[in-house]
Length: 142
Image 1 (cartoon, helix red, strand yellow):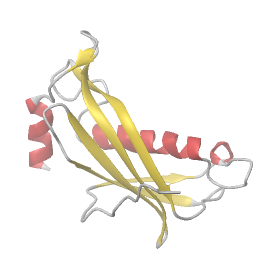
Image 2 (cartoon, one colour):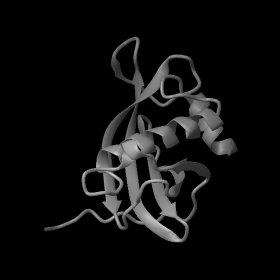
Image 3 (cartoon, one colour):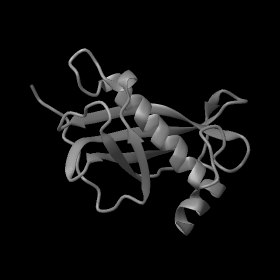
Image 4 (tube, one colour):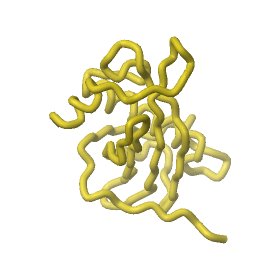
């Protein structure tokens, strides 16, 4: 079976720590794929918050984001009460979209690599929009 193989990024500018809880563990006794999606969501919210932004406001008061795609490569298992580090990098920005690259680690082990494709979206008009200049300026200044 062919697999999508994600690559490590040269740098990850944002860091989020989480401890796996019972709700994150699946019937196999390890981190569930659905739980990882939720943890990536938490990391994204914290990343945007650290920039003074949110999923509903990329800095102009009217433009948010919608997830267009998600890819995860699982490399190791995670278990209840493991402390994970989720390091993130924003890249591949176009006029209407960007990607967030994630590296999920426990100590020196990489548990997973993930990428999310995000589209700039005007929720009032219910349509895809250009990424606001305010977001681009925040990204350049960091």
